[in-house]
Length: 96
Image 1 (cartoon, one colour):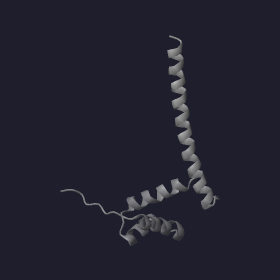
Image 2 (tube, one colour; image 1 turned 180 degrees about the vertical axis):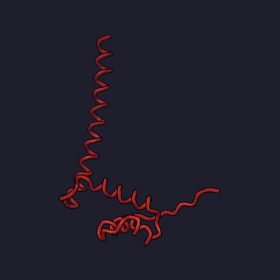
Image 3 (cartoon, rainbow, N blue to C red; image 1 turned 45 degrees about the horizontal axis):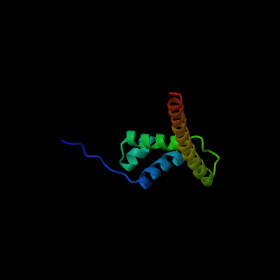
Image 4 (cartoon, rainbow, N blue to C red; image 1 turned 30 degrees about the vertical axis):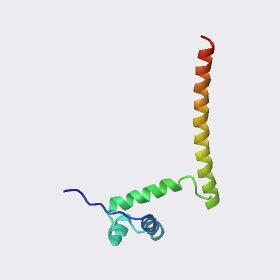
């Protein structure tokens, strides 16, 4: 028999994490109150902690800009790597 999994919307997950962080209650206690598995709520809290890591003390605008700049940086790195490879191929062809 297939396992039936509950789907929780983003607002519910964020609210549950906020309850854990703001009230200081244990994950087990909050999970029991909300009817969510402890492991599931623990995973949500861990993901929220990872997402916040390195952004403490920054405003919402700064965080958005940081995300945008990181994405741009990754794209530029990829373009640079492609150009490096094409130059190597071009030099090989030119020296034949």
